[in-house]
Image 1: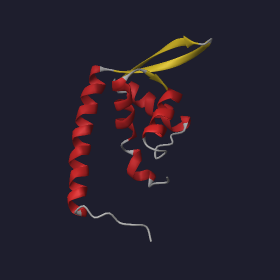
Image 2: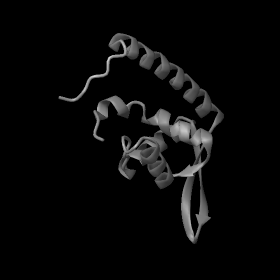
Image 3: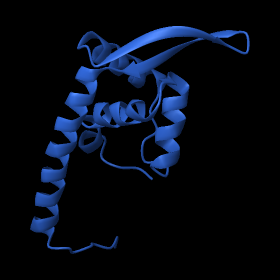
Length: 113
């Protein structure tokens, strides 16, 4: 399903941090997990994900390490304590935002014409 990329782009880091709060993952695993859990709403490309991961790592929200898997080296990412704190803050902000939008819409669901 296609959606307005602007709405989602600012929240992608929150989604990545959420995935990594559940377990350590490598890039393609994150891409596939987001795609599957979102019913194809989030179809990240590697060219989008990796700069985001590098930014989160430079902010101290993630650390990465390499590990061999079936003869190939993969870079795994792990959330830090600072990342967990940032995630908690972002989830709180998102909850307030989504609640406000729901109140403005008044529970109305618009059907496509």
